[in-house]
Length: 245
Image (cartoon, rainbow, N blue to C red; front, side, top):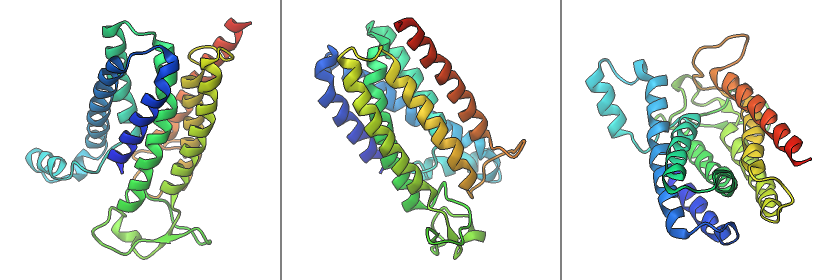
């Protein structure tokens, strides 16, 4: 599903690239390095977050990471790695950063929706117990659900996030059309993505039932990071709006 998400995002970028003035050959390089760095970043963040739980020693942990490379990713790690690869390639090819970032923003949301469906199918990133109708029960011990929660109805929070990401994609796709028609300032679409996804992630973290790392003030690390990103995005969008006037 992660691979399907990348393919859907790539297809979208090429379909919308015509009006941006960016060459497809350049976009191919941009996509390649962004995807490569995103995969590495997501895996590195996963390893750093759950390092002690991966095995009894360093060798066993590294073997586990290689053996299970098809799953075990942290989205914000992938976003950080992908952003680094994106910025490096943009600078190397002297591309207009705001325009390229706006083009990639809806694709990010679209690809992420596919990835979260994959999380649901694997049982990772699962929700907390749910007594109501939305609860989904995992029973296969081979899945990634905490063994203590097997047989317990859980919030399908992965599907909530997939649906939210699809909604964000629809909003950003429309915003990109307005940006390309110069009715929105360049850079507004990527700013809107950061704000909308951070708000969605902050809210859904309350329903997560997997290990979230340390907790402070009742908030997870993902929520602190989401709050920081949302605040930065809001300031960035306010600055764009002020400069447009």
